[in-house]
Length: 489
Image 1 (cartoon, rainbow, N blue to C red):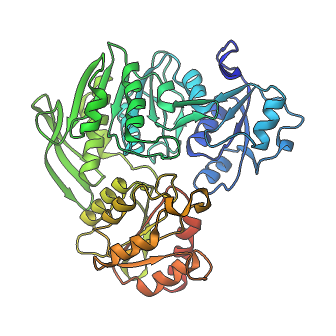
Image 2 (cartoon, rainbow, N blue to C red):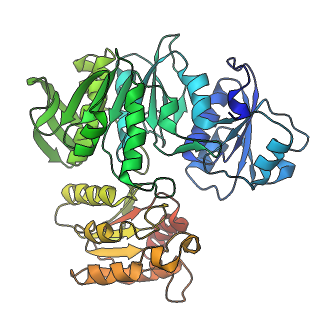
């Protein structure tokens, strides 16, 4: 095993910790949490952008902008945390290896330092992890349990993506459980290091084509997660998703399903929506628990609420606290986030959606929220899966609720042979054949993404809803759009 796992581990006390890849959402959040615990934190990264760059700066975390052996020269951190995007050849990593510094992955550090002996609640699934984890943490907070948490975003209710439990042992720690690998020296899915007592599986689909070759490989990781839940633990599983039920089928613990169909242990009835959110009755074991309202939209968020509610009530939160917590819940940043109301009644939104299913559900929820208004969807093919042609067909089917579709440049296309890349020209033709207006940025010689701004300037109509869909910065398209709207108001 690697050196990170062979030295005798004791809880760290006032240590210096260096994060390679500190700008990642989870890495930055963990760095800030450990800083609040008294550790001296620094690190390095490239191409940091808001909200994480601002988040680090607001918490006085010093970091190097760029990787270089000079970053670590003359320093002796007690621990070096290696982000899972960091590979051999990184100058900071090579220096740490050459000088036999103690290395650890971020999820291993979270498991040891933050989860410890707390009751571990792990939220897993291809979609909905960040929102469900945020809801679960807030419901526990509303119930007075002061949970620790790790969330892959900045939850508005807390303002931090990670914090230690506020209670003495044993308390609760809620983790967003990512199936992505842990580090270059540890290829286990992150969620396997969080050792769940209560696990949620929202859904299981193919994703992360850079490390998984098939849906079966992803399901294998989820089965390993299921196998870690102790006999006296609980597995909450999406009862409407056959692949989730499949990976849960050999669990050694109690299983409860959450679903929109009434035969599940947790379900929802009388679902209604308005401009302020969604209301529905939560049914547990066939009996109504009561009616709740939450400022979220779409049936997929009803499912997220059901899963989080089930976890919170099993942790001891009463239903009255659940009702209050859901009413006061605020969605994480970049999850159907309203950027602002622009001139001419134009609404600008952004969302983290980058998988075809997430795009389809997000656009459907926006159409429900703004009935009768045109949707202009701007999508950046940036993830390791959507930059390939794996979802070529699925992407042609997920923009049905949009009238105008804009594609950003495919991220780092040189990684793949031409026949493996996403073909945005083919996508454009397929969507145009359905009567949609389509534009692809970065193809006509104009500076990118100003070419998108030019196109939108001549295409957006008063009252349109413009939504940016990306798991990255979209080359600062949001800021450029805001500047454009202000300049032309």
